[in-house]
Image (cartoon, rainbow, N blue to C red; front, side, top):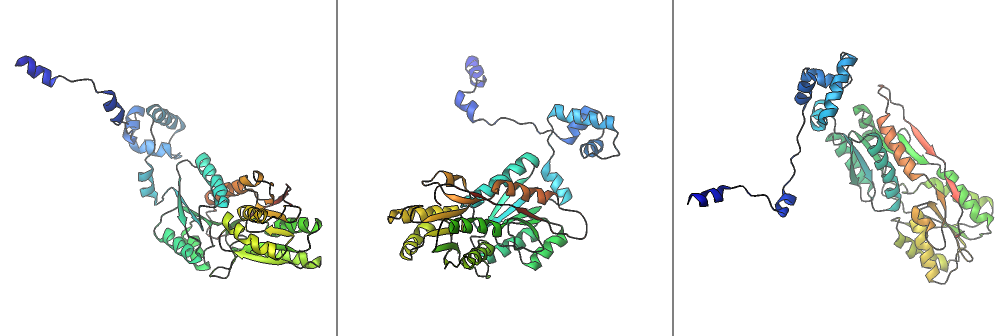
Length: 358
């Protein structure tokens, strides 16, 4: 019986399955642990880690050495509770499914991970609605859900923007018409000029532009400067220009336009609505027997990664989307602390990328 009892209480080695499913214990190192290791108070540790000038350099070095040896990681939740911050950057966009947003987001993510690794990104979709975008701006500010906002959607109303300025919350907008706000944008007039002149110089006499439908607030999703520049240059050359509008910047939207483009005998397309729509137009027109560029020349906008992979390779207007995303993050962190708000504008110069479609 004794043998049986000792056998029943004997510890056994965990099986492989048990070892794999048992969570590892990760020790949580606190300020008090660092203080004990450095032989100072926890208040001294807190001040030293913040770079407080009241702490002697020798003491700070001792604290930093102890923190590094113990693997101390600051408690960001506690720090944010004290400071009233969130360590979050909110991104408001019409959608997160298009290639334009994806390449811009890559720049935002890279800059945050490389320069501000303690910050996280939170995405909020306006689902293509200008009204929804305004609601999101209000909710983010009132709920203190983010320390800064980057907008790829409609810009905030003047009243909402004024509230952000008063709260000293950085808000950066991807829109060159957001006058009085911090802006990231490309030179749309120059981009349209490069595209239009290429089509006209190649002999197009019935060119057309693809833009977006007017939204509920009367604005265009793709910059209206591209449209006005296109028609101005065509008129100067005595060329009758056409226009078609779409609601979504998708491959399928371009495909759906092919029949009307062919029926109206367009010989050139400036797709101001972006490369994915332009690629859809090429696919739809080729399916109808149209040769590109022999019968129809096509120029896109943005120079997405896929644009060089399609056949024929798409001629387009390049924008440095990744760089623009990075710069938006830098503007958030470089916002001036002065009481008087001065808007900052960062304009990026587009360039023509000549390939096979035009």
